[in-house]
Length: 260
Image (cartoon, rainbow, N blue to C red):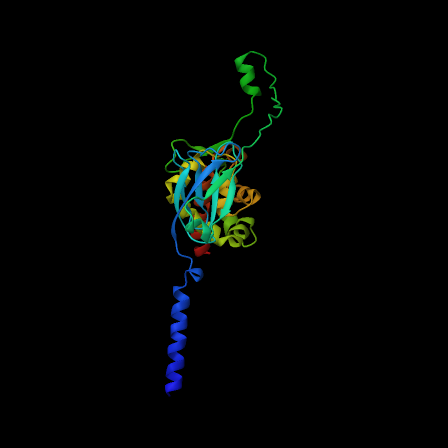
């Protein structure tokens, strides 16, 4: 009986030691580092830093320094206008040493030829108005945004078409949401972080949004298309508007999916 009791005590002590081992626990701490220009070694101010795992964001100060909640193996997404975005995996060394520096490389942009498609204008207003293309899209308005934007063709069956598509088990929308449940659950958390929202409001390339949600550009376009958003909206909306549109679509999907 004493042998069994002694064995149990040893096992409990081993489990407790394992639980207290910092190498086996992913504790969230404040990570501090500095972002610099790889070409000049100068600090970069107002660089956006996002923890993709915990969905929190911050920006660097005048000295290029930032502080953000993070745990070992979290991934930081760092972006700055004119520089190549970078993803950094958090390691133990980054917490132990206070002089961690992250370098960003400048992008070289080449101007592309722009072709302007001319309209056959005559100079007479009444004639030219008839020749210009007509935009039949109606406007969506998302809370928190000062402006509205196009959301699809305004037809009597537009809403029914979207709702019917969501309820269809074979629909592309259901397949996309079903393949990415964890990413879709991040939508609300992303919207609650003002730093991330400010960053997305300045972006139009979908790169940061794709990193946050771990979605491909084609998946984002498929979701918006199935929710009856117009091509003009998908081409001209900033990333924050796209985020809110995805969130709205997903909330409708969840409600209708429960009812089905």
